[in-house]
Length: 491
Image (tube, rainbow, N blue to C red; front, side, top):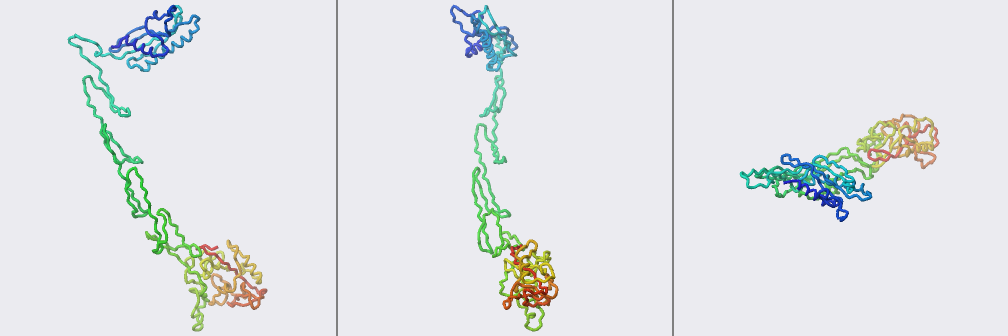
């Protein structure tokens, strides 16, 4: 049973543990210093009871705790004593206020009063008044015998707490006096998830038991982008596997030529032997093959001369009857030009609009270059006399749009290629449309038999004549240029 002695014993234990307190207990008069023997130790703690209140099974005590120290004769240590004793009493109050002793609860707050010149200037310090409540008493604590009938024994119920290994509370409750409890610990549930947090499986684990959890293997299905299975693989959980997708074999007309990586794109570049870009007219995806259609223009070798254009037969076996030579007719090709049509004459865009007056003659295409003409006579339609030297200089300086250089006066063979023998005058057909009139068109070819003369074509006929280079009867000229062909781009 808790009692006043219990309180004294607990406070004495505190004082014995405190490194500043030198003595505890006894009556106040007994604590006075004995200057004859000088055997007293300071500071000292002693207690005086004030009241005892019993509330049912609870004991409440109010008492005064004194903490004093001896005063020097010159009183030089009075402030030090006052400060030290106050701190010692606060230590005691805080110790029990913070529940360091489960049997004692401090009620309310304590009050402290200073002591100075106590009992004829012997000591000074502080006195603290505090109220404590002791733990509840039970009939089980009361020693009793030879009582008939014996009083019933009523003890408090037992509290229990069940925690896991991390001291997390699983269950708690009370077991009544004399009672029993059968506590069932629930099984654990293990959740297996993938790295994205998606549940894979759950497993029940008995309390205090263990379980083996098997993570299922992964299945890897490697497919081609459009269709078809490349590989089916099983990957053990928490493992890695390296799979190499084989390169793609590239066959050209059934013959293996090379391969490319399975994940790389294949850039098919169509060019001719002169490195000119070829533009497909049609591309068809056949799954494991591609059909590419091209309009291929076979370069002219020059071995076969061009047709004259004459189609009228004047006698059996003549030119009009046989029409010997290259081209389907004077204005049509036997095979398509790079623009995909069989027109001999086109503009620079493959049509027949001639917005810049440039006429491309695809009969002269050799696979990389082609001749083109500015169809305007004199390069501007002037009616003044243009002598041979001036015609050459003017042609060299000629410029049309972005084609600012490379122009020149045509030679005899080049201007002869424009003669259509089915027409009575030079160039009087589309797209040149040169009117029938007197005069000539210069070539850059000199007559070797008379170097003061150059070859010309007569405008009102189709005859090639020798004309003085200084002639003054309105000779004309049209410039020609060699164009480089890259696919359908001319430069």
